[in-house]
Image (cartoon, rainbow, N blue to C red; front, side, top):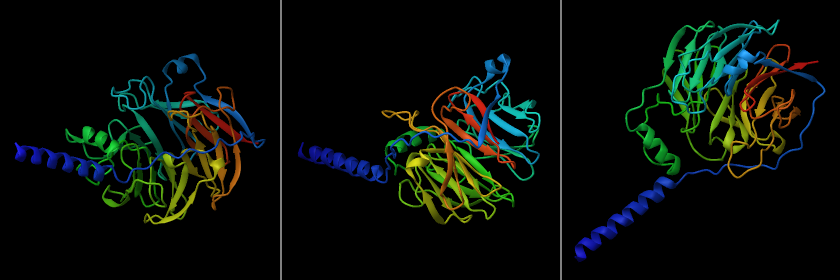
Length: 357
């Protein structure tokens, strides 16, 4: 009897020690005071899509936006699906809008995605899309022909293992370097290499060469410099430096193309970055999606923030609402060569343009 009791106590102590170990390394979500909403006289707002009643019937959660070399705007939405949806979306999820006329010129992406999330257009106008349900990164031609798919398939145990790791950060999952766990965004370098923000159930940014071979990753949960807590958006500048929307840490982090930490921007006025894009002018354009998706919090700031290459805020505008010029959870952002800004709004389920005056 005493031996059995000792064994039971030993098991309990071992389980307690393992739980304590696996629980180490967590990171709390950062909340900021809500900055005062501002208006910018430099931009004229306009809703680009959906405009017709027919389009409004198929419009879903706004996910991504990007601009190609001709100035055409690509807008990604989830149609009848939602974040984490399991069913393949039957509606065309990619809406292509002519950069000059602002009229729809193409639609594709039906019967491909379950929950599309990140959107990128590379220097050859190939279209890259991440899917957080299928845990893949897809590469397409401009008209929607699939060129390549990246990301290992999940083994049967992976999803429950990741759910446990959400609670116990050090719990082992057996993931390979090529396994994504709800990848949020991707940016493609001039040499064809690409970096993925693998953010919802991983906490890493990971770089691959043009053929998809692993190069390096930053994969440490936390809020210290170089650590990440939901890397949600990613972009790069002409030097190849990487800019990451570190969403739960409410900051932007800057890394070299080799993954070395350079800087962090966490001003209160920056809010909570969801998506970001480095413009041709070198400025960093940020979609601040606020706190509306976070429990036990106020709505937070819902705005566009423009920073220079040193992280100084040079403009910001927007506020919660559904009127033209207002925003509800701006999820992604893009800018064209003229300085016009395009914002994909998650809750308003629309693409809005802020045309530079």
